[in-house]
Image 1 (cartoon, rainbow, N blue to C red):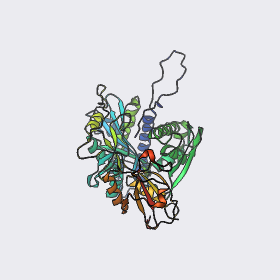
Image 2: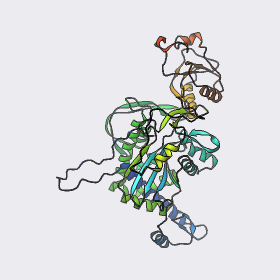
Image 3: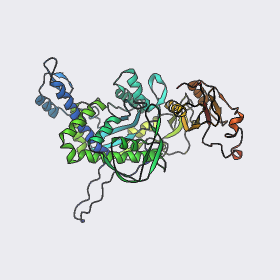
Image 4: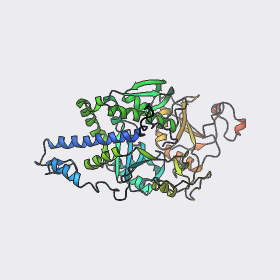
Length: 495
């Protein structure tokens, strides 16, 4: 999901008078990951001992497996120390892969759609770490659901088996990239905000002021969030808004800007978590444990987490990165699924090139071939999807924004919303403002909405929009060059 790399990872330069070697570089994300591993380990311990206080069958709970077992804690630790050679899958092959997922969680729109999708690869023998960032809009085959955005995998898993979304997503990522990914860690927004609140907020230097009028609000609505330039302390809610904003002004609406802001928050949270006042405060630690025990899920057990935490302390941070995108890496191109939903697609039409890059991420001599022309698969079209505009043709407040949310969840791109100059309109109508819209997109839109499209624009609307056959050079100033399809929402639209 990240398009460009920025070096926010170097520590501040220290004046050592030239007498000492410069300090080693540390990576804030991986430092945060280490802290997260340690906290999850504490969560497992907390769960284990909480459950062991009143065992139903007189047995103790084994902190290695979290299952009832008649084994003392001393024996468990002894087993961990002397039998850790193959504690994690991938150790023998010198490559351990873990899927990191970030989602909204209950109370958010699309609670199980994952905003963050990162494959963390570790080479234990070489003490090196790599991160592969996967965009949420990457189109993949998800079992019986067909071609969908990869961020839907966790949600589909929750539909099939509640609480198993992470496990389902892990399998989809492994199948898609031809990679053994045996483990996952899933965190929701609630844990993120509560962690920040418990450490007293995070200090962030906002480089540029910006506003976002389309930030998700309650009940499928939108709210405006704004941030002024300068150093400030953000609480959990503010930090989450700052990190998630996708439609900010002043150049802050790009994925690149969003990635930079996420790095800022992660680094600031890492500093707070590692501060002496946080980890020596039993009240804070207890509250963090209670939050994370509910809002973090993983298939890693206690022993595996402790092994990773000890291994992480011996590494020098993230040494390799791979960003799957349609920019810097040039591995993906804009496209649409067979149903017409916008997705990012492999430029070659299949995942062979991408899988090769992931497999060889630790290989210094491996390079990704460059080409300016995508090579599409014969069975899969690669074209830009249509840009939609929605106008509220009724007196129902918020109808356009609600419909925008509904269509965006289906994968369509809505570039703007507003009110119709003529109201009320009894029947919803879809107007094609351009001739070159792909037929698959039109069919998909008609199927999803239940309304037919037309190129015939009524007279009352022609003052605002030109006929789609009019050359762009002759279009009136009022025509929106960003709009391919205009939807006038009528009274028959029930949302």
